[in-house]
Amino acid sequence: MTLVPASLRKLSRTLAVGAAAIAATLAVPGAASAQDLIDFLWGGDQEHGGGRKTVSFPAQHKPGQIIVSFGDRRLYHIVKPGQAVSYPIAVPREQSRWQGVTQVSMKRENPPWTPTPTMRAENPRLPSYVPGGHPMNPLGNRALYLGSSTYRIHGTDAPWTIGQAVSKGCIRMFNEDVASLYPQIAVGTKVTVTWDRFTTGGITAAAERSEDELEAAARRTNERRARYQRNVQRSRSASIN
Image 1 (cartoon, rainbow, N blue to C red):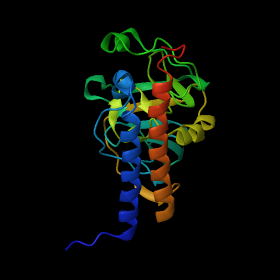
Image 2 (cartoon, one colour; image 1 turned 90 degrees about the vertical axis):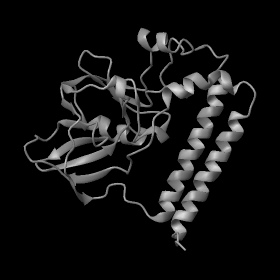
Image 3 (tube, rainbow, N blue to C red; image 1 turned 90 degrees about the horizontal axis):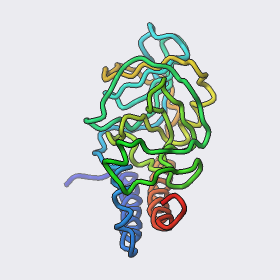
Image 4 (tube, rainbow, N blue to C red; image 1 turned 180 degrees about the horizontal axis):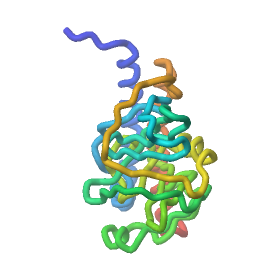
């Protein structure tokens, strides 16, 4: 018989409760009409995760710059030679992959979201505009715009997608992580986006948590997901539709 640690059993129960709450929300009449938007924003299979942490990093990268590794599904902010803060991210879907060197061209707090014509052609149910701060805004609470492209490093109101391959090219972060990174990044900051993977060593776990804290974090994620579902339903007849 395989023994399962008590902490894992507690975490499993928390996730099961969250799943039940989501199922109950989806059972409300009218939810299906919002499912296209939900599927568009979510999707993908979870393969990576973990919290924010400080790691050793190849010393040739200069402090201040950002390295985004789609292979690692991590964003690395170089804080000093040989050291970076590593953040978990959601990365583009296979058909939206890209890489290159760019820079931060603009910063926005509570950014509005306007789907591109390509996005709306793919999914006509998408709203034409979502104002900043709206509960259905997929950019979350902060955005760093990359060059002249439509790509951004931004937050999300679907935190359970972090660690997955889900986006149309943007780089998603937890809202609390992008809010922490945002004031440290100036317009003009170099950003390297690559599929290369990096060998890093843990130095200090900035988000290292006790078992109770992990359980509480899982519970908050489940609550946010259920709340998002409810907001989708309530917003079907709102002005953004």
